[in-house]
Image (cartoon, rainbow, N blue to C red; front, side, top):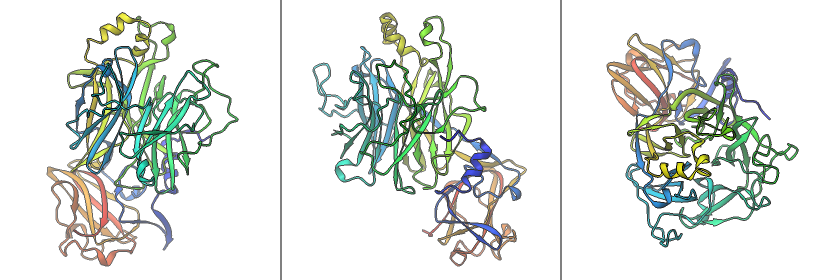
Length: 516
């Protein structure tokens, strides 16, 4: 099993990862063939650090956060479960989530939206609850579930659901797959994919580069961490290392959880505080840059419980922050320790648990992500199992909900320069297309100019910094213009460097492509 990587190891590993732009040797320089793919500044993969100065790489938290679903239905009386997932099906967003009712029974449900802001609970008529089928409940006992769209599946299996089944039968408890044509009518497979209950959300995706399905789930190595498995067939039992001794956290009479049976790809390390663990991953393949993988792990800061908890909860209580992680191959990750979404005050409520759901949707120039927020710590629902007075008291409180986090397209990480200015120069690269577009934001007293250079760093005739029209804008897809125009067709396929000169500006991404 591979240990987690340090920052230096991550940068070294990404230079040769299989999902990266192809690299060839020419004139003693490494030249990356990026074709017309969008390039984000998540790392120094394409940045020549020796020719770059005056800029800082910054993690950008969401630009806005608002609650979009409150626990208002009887099936939601004790709030939403930590996990949710969102998909965008031809302009209709579908949000899958779990909830607790007043008896702490779990339910799996669907909400829908066109704009990603105003959500409805459709009356599906599929599951009877309290004598009525007029609800949005799905008749799948899906615990720790996530849904993703499968681009390779036949029409009747376009939606894939990964979920856990628990007791009472330990011979059936484990991870399962269900399929649906529409996210409403589900067919459950009786084939057990893993004979373990990871006790957390399973995040699946189709990886076009690998031509495999990739699943991220929880393992204990030695505490909560993120494991990964890649498979050709989602519906055939997934491979694992059967020689690893079983790890029982609920007793030997019950099914074990994962420990080292799968590859651990994200775990606490020396950069984390004592007691840190990783609860979920919320991993996705970024749809607008195919060589980029993103994750939004719930960083679980454990601590001994307060006086109302007994000794059994010590070490199993704490808070969640949402962190941000990026990868070029889905295996080697760099995880920022500054929270992407910290526990804090949102929409009038102090949330102590924030857990990102899997998936994101795009509306215009914004990305929408969804997270579950609770105003209590991790151990509180365990108390409800045995303290009915405490449970009854919480039934009267505002229990948070599902929140929308708004992010700029490509906006997770930027290279920033202040008023003194800065320069970002790429390594040599080849592109296809005839224009250059940039995702950037400048202050009023700021701007960006772009130059194209040869391998030695000399500006190409007509494409120097002084030839470029000064860009003073906040755009996600700004076409760069020089005095001669924007047509770069004659340079396509030639090795060039791109040089960005910034003042009071932020640079998020760039992309070569066809004009239009």
